[in-house]
Length: 195
Image (cartoon, rainbow, N blue to C red):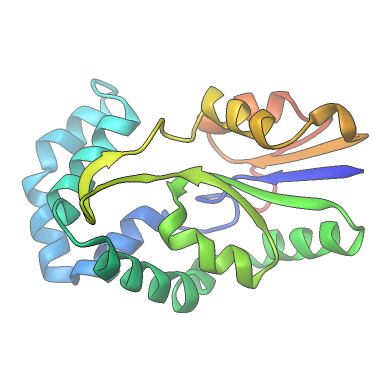
């Protein structure tokens, strides 16, 4: 058996789906205003003064804190179904199709949320490991449920789902420092393969 692991944002896609989803969900005027309000926090993140998951939670809280999950999921499904295909890299999709034609298990491993990745992955017959949003009493809290799925957390989650000893070859595709640990468990690793 062979396993192919693909990072999503920047590897399969040309743009960050999280930022794209926010703009799609709230509209550009609200998006730009919110990003301006969050400017100091985003600058702190850019300067590596705060970690990725904190920046992500602050954006989620600002734009979606308190939203009913049913409302949020409906918009996420629309984004996943109709918008994600607009930002995918043809080369990445060709490689995914090749792996599938060889009978390999293909898995998207992403720090983005399952909410807007599920439908797209289902449509393309891909398995998914991703970050999750916390929901309480039917509403988004703005926090992550569990850890952000990047760096070593990707490897931890992969090993929870798959017995890597069962695979003769493990392919991994990534494009950023958040993928290094995943690339290091692969027998065949590809960094920025589709750019």
